[in-house]
Image 1 (cartoon, rainbow, N blue to C red):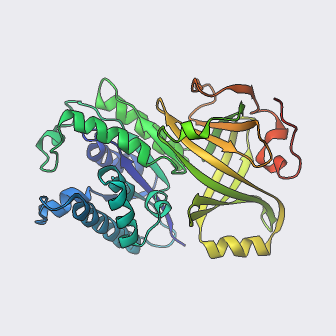
Image 2 (tube, rainbow, N blue to C red):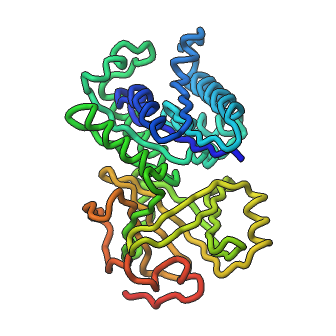
Image 3 (tube, helix red, strand yellow):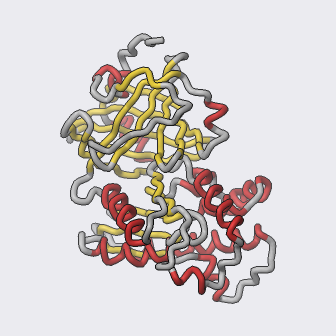
Length: 359
């Protein structure tokens, strides 16, 4: 069976994506990964003679088609059992940044893809915030960089909004030097890949029911989640169906508790058929559904869960790199209390026993 992890590097112009991709390759090779880069499709098609003077729609469609072809060609070469990482300089969802609503709907139709197909085909996305670091000399010499400074800033902001909703979306801020920025990126990528161990470190808060209409005016996306807790021949695990508007991804997760805030977590993307077969085969101990608002705010990716059984309160979760990492809650979120250490508020418990609302 192929073990493929797909990562996209996104963000505005001059964020250092291409430079970072090249630097990530030798770093991940040290840990036994086979690393397959997908370099920026826009540059590739322009170098092959594509006329940039065509419409934005035709340009983005050509980029997307080339990107899909490149990703699929790599996937075909990966061998069973190979620990492979595909790293893309931009991903399919970046087309949203450059298209109006009408053209965006058209490109989804023409590619026969949903928003989830475009965005969540990548297991993780890392947004490199725009920078003017002199260390990234190749930006200044690039043939495809035509944006003015104010346009680059706007693209950077639209990019943050476009990728909200991805299961693992992280913000890499501007630093005094690109080496500092790359160090943050490398730590985030290693944590995502489970180097040295696949750990989940998170804090959970019970909050007052948020203004969901306001959330969606920010870089934020709503996704629906159904999850089931099962027992099979190899023990307990969780199945999750995640998506929106008919587009879904399916994930099998096995967790092992290390401390109240830290768990060893192994996730595996599975097909819809595998998901349905496991639900038939193994014993379901509980199920739950919720709407998740994925919010990128001040450089942190917050997940706000709205449950059908509560009308006045909700959940906020934040994943961290370390247990002592400081958390700043957005000013428009009212925290009732932290529930990281309260077993009653675990999703697996909420399946069968819901605490009364506290407000």
